[in-house]
Length: 453
Ligand code: MN
Ligand code: MN
Image 1 (cartoon, rainbow, N blue to C red):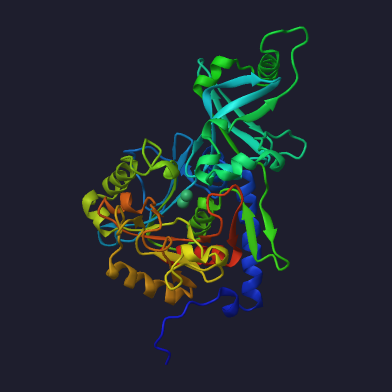
Image 2: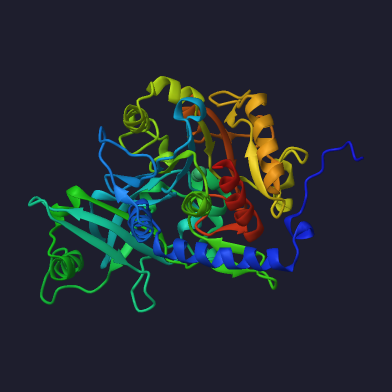
């Protein structure tokens, strides 16, 4: 008997049939990625998926019946999927899966348009943690909504179809970069210079701001909007890349926004497929990348309100339900990258192809601001995953005192719910084009499905 702890490689354990399932599963995920690049688009595509599977919307405070399949659409940016189970709610609580569907990006400002040197630009304010230089000289698409005074909403999506134009941020040519090269990566690229090129033709005969006016004329013709309408718009610039297989063997998948759709997708498939009697609440959250504040973030009272609604319907005390509930905070973690080995502690980091990764804690500077999951809850999950044949590993967000980060786990745990972080290890996390292993994606699906039983 081997008494040592060893990570296992998914492909080493998989037979041909399992390898085929891993590859096929990634195809569904690719479509999910390409159809939903923003939180709003993911909600829209998920609602369609749910309705096809017989799910219906519900209201807070409504009567929920055992066996019902429901969803709650939170302002078009977050989603709660509910399977009302027949199991004893007072004993088992709710099985909660939560992933976030917002990703780092460049948001247009409220007065974005200007022109300089006969080029029309849109000013941006970045959202989430980005390395600014990565967003230069790549094709960007623009997604979002413009809410009009009359209550109507205009949806915009430009740059995703092959025939669409894209948007672009310039960089300085290497020939003239001697001064720029002396600056640090942190200092060399200024946020106020992350401005999208959005046009270049001027209005004939127009002397002042002709290029900007030409862009406004186009927007007015295409969408019926004026410059003032940007005041009530949410427009997000994201990479226009499609998800692509990587490597001769197609083991990896590159895409924008794996963080955290790579957990949202297996969460959803596990929820749709699970043959379970438990009450299941699967959450797609917004605003994780900026601290989970606001009414679409996980710090809002909505989760408590929904558990109250379920508990009242079942005639059980809501605080008791929360105390018996369990949550997998499904979020990505840093995968070990041999090119940057010194950033990691090799014994305690997640490795690609070695399965879905559990982080007992996150945080920074001595586990500050973390949900440090109890040994007991992890012990329970080890049993669940072993029984289901899930390949999983333990991980940590980089070596101690290098940096750190957080997830929504602590906000759920603060509601008196046992919670642990579990997700797919990512290489180049928060880059415009991130990398994951298809084997780890499929392992996440299996882990989430086993948790719901
Ligand atoms: Mn994340
Ligand atoms: Mn993130």
